[in-house]
Structures are given as C-alpha cells and as structure tokens.
Image 1 (cartoon, protein in one colour):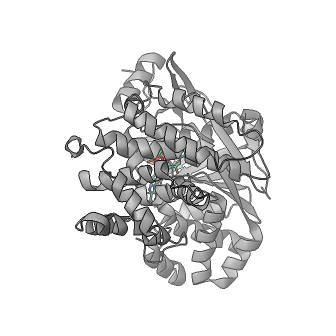
Image 2: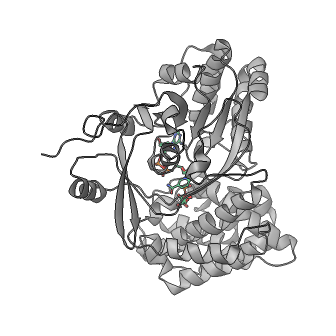
Length: 459
Ligand SMILES: NC(=O)c1ccc[n+]([C@@H]2O[C@H](COP(=O)([O-])OP(=O)(O)OC[C@H]3O[C@@H](n4cnc5c(N)ncnc54)[C@H](O)[C@@H]3O)[C@@H](O)[C@H]2O)c1
Ligand SMILES: O=P(O)(O)OC[C@@H](O)[C@@H](O)[C@H](O)[C@H](O)CO
C-alpha cells in the first residue's frame, strides 16, 4: 500500500497563518496556493483555507496536513509538484474558527473563490436580498443567536470579530470571475453589514481594502483517474490533487494595508488600472468558454477541446472574439497573441474540461462575459450578432437540457413554459431587464437560437 501524502512523508514546514481563504476548491489550490508557495517570502505566509458548502475537501486535506499535488498537464505530458502553503484546511461551517482567524492580528489577507453565484447578485448587479440564505444571514447577524451560512454572511461575521478585537486593517482579495470583482465584493459585504450594523459597515469602509483581480488558470474538477495518475507517478496516495494547465496569470489592483506575500516573485502583476486585463480575460476566455459550453453541448460534445474542434463552434468563437476585440483597448493587451494562445489552451485535449461544469450559473456568467460586448456593439451602431449568438445558445441549452444549475433555475423553468419571443424575453429578463426590454435584441436572439439546434444530444 502506498504511503499517504502528508508532512511526514513530505517534510514541509508550516508557515504561520497570515492568509484566510474562503472556497477551498480546485482553483484555489492551483492558483493562490501555488502563487503563495512560489513567493520569495513563502515561509512567512501560511494559508488557512475554509470550504464553502460541504466539509469534504477540508476533511481530505486535513488528513494530508494540507498538502496536495498540482499536476501541470500539457500536450507534452504531466509534471507534479507538492504544495505546502495551505497549513490548515477547515470546514466552512466552523464559523468560530473562521472568525477567530479573521480577528487574529497576524492575519493580513482574506482571499475568496466562492463562485460568481455566491455573491448573490440580482439582475441589477446589486446584492439580492431575496437570494437563498441572505435574509436568514441578515437575521443571524442581527441577533447573533445563530451563525451565518452564506460565505458573505460569514465574512461579515468574521470582520465584526476583527473590529471587536481591534486587530487592524486587512485586504480582501476576490479571485472569482466577476467584472470589478473587488467592488462587487465590497458592495456585497458593506451592503450586508449596513443592513445589520451601521457602525460595522463604517469600520469595514475605513479598514478593509477590497482588491480587484483578474485570475487565470484553467483548472477542471479532479477525477479518480487524476488521483490514480498521481499515485502511479509519485509513489504516494494523494486524495486531493488538482490538475491545471501550464499557463497561469494573476493581475491585482488595490492596497494591502497589512502586507502581502511577494506574489510578484511568482509572476503576479500589480497594476493601477485593471479593467482592460479583466475584460480581455472575462470576454475572450470566459465568454468563449460559455459559448462552447452551450453550443458544444447542443452539438453533442463533452469537453472544451472537443467543442473547439467542431468548425461551427470554432467559427462562432472567432466571430464573438472579433466583436469583443473591437472594444478592448489598452497598452500591452496584445489581442492577436492572446487569441492565438487561447486556441492552443482550449485545444489542450489532455485537460478534460467538461462543458457541463462551465455551463452552470449561466445567468450570472453571461451578464459579465457577453452582455457588455453586446451593449458596446449596439452602442456602436452594429447588431452584435455574434455576441447575441452566445446568449441564444444559452437559451437553446436551457430548453434542451434537464437539471439546469443556476441561481435563477426556477425563473428559467417558468420562462421555458412560454413559447416564441415571449419565452426569449422572459429568459433575457433573468440576465438583464434592459436586454429583455429591447425588442430588436429579443428578435435577434430568437432568430439565432436555432443555430446549434441539436437537442437530442442533451439529457
Ligand atoms: N476552475 C477554474 O479554472 C477557475 C479559473 C479562474 C477563476 N475561477 C474562479 O474560482 C471559482 C471556483 O472555482 P473552482 O474550480 O475552485 O470550483 P470548486 O467547485 O472546486 O470550488 C468552489 C468552492 O466554492 C464553494 N461554493 C460554491 N458555490 C457556493 C455557494 N453558492 N455558496 C458558498 N460557497 C460556494 C464550494 O463549496 C467550494 O469550496 C469559480 O467560480 C471562478 O469564479 C476558477
Ligand atoms: O470557473 P467558472 O465557473 O467561473 O467558469 C468556468 C470557466 O470559464 C473558468 O473556470 C475558466 O476555466 C477559468 O476562468 C480560466 O482561468
């Protein structure tokens, strides 16, 4: 029997906890944990990482003393690296430990990868007070008789503890695929705090810096085959490896009032103006991912690489990129090279990135990945057809598949009981009210919604 990966089989020292992470999933491990291990001052920066919804990832990682393997997977083969920057892995339901660590004076940075849907944004882009868990968390934060269950509720709870402990300022670093993600996180956190304690909201405003980031490293969900591959290649049993592409990128903008690791040693870039980088990534990479997720599944494909190899999907991607690129300006963006690199990254067939995973939470994702391009195209006097096709593919996908996972799943199901343009209008209203109110857009999306029609492939 193989030995288990842990700090005895691989003697990594434990850095002191100075970073608290919320959302212990695959991406946190391949990205922020990797960058922290590769910072020049890594020995000073340990991460305590909390799960979001289930304890499973924390249970497995805790049994390995926080250690896991990053499998860097390219067409040329796999390389393996043990990461030791996560020094404590904890069930997110342990809000007591979370608050204790947020309140610790040594804690300087809180990072988040809790998915787009967890920010509970409504179609107006603001915190949706009717979203699951929000009202209950506001009540819990008010009377303190229960602990909050949403990630943002837990963060507000933790920040209240830090204020009470007078532990000083810190930085919250949002690493989710959202435009203006620092501002979104700030609005959601301060909005929630304001609803329960004006003094706390003012303290957060004065003491917490919300850093915006553009994060990039394709990291699919780990499979049993990945676990077996690590065992075969490394000679130890790791139940929490993570597979990622060789490419990685991290652009950050904002203040770190209590310090931060020297992530720049690992290639992170600190900028004053993040928007051009953010748009390039969210539109070209994530927008194309969403298009491939819907169009590709309609055409019977399972992975990004398979969908990209289908000419009709690839042409739709290129046309969408042409429209998006017209609105991407800024020094050093190098759009042609970025597009060429994306084709290569998407075509990495050894990374089995499942379209079904990318397809989740479409209403929230399309709002950031496609809608801004459509708006910009129409403002420029053009139809925005290629971008409308991205949204049209989603409308077709919602009708063809079952078990749609989306914060607006109930609204999607109701909309799909309608027919024709009424159905399209109802679906678009779940993404954006103005979009649904524009008759020309509704007609355009309706006319394009049969482009990838092949519903028999789904279910
Ligand atoms: N995987 C990638 O390639 C990648 C790349 C760039 C950015 N990201 C960002 O990171 C996020 C997480 O990706 P991942 O691959 O780690 O996913 P994952 O499913 O492996 O992990 C997500 C984590 O967030 C928690 N979570 C999910 N939904 C939640 C909810 N509604 N409320 C509370 N907690 C919730 C989960 O419990 C888990 O801890 C993405 O949504 C995206 O915003 C991912
Ligand atoms: O992780 P999500 O669900 O926000 O989006 C799915 C993919 O588009 C995304 O994970 C990309 O692979 C990633 O953003 C690449 O850096």
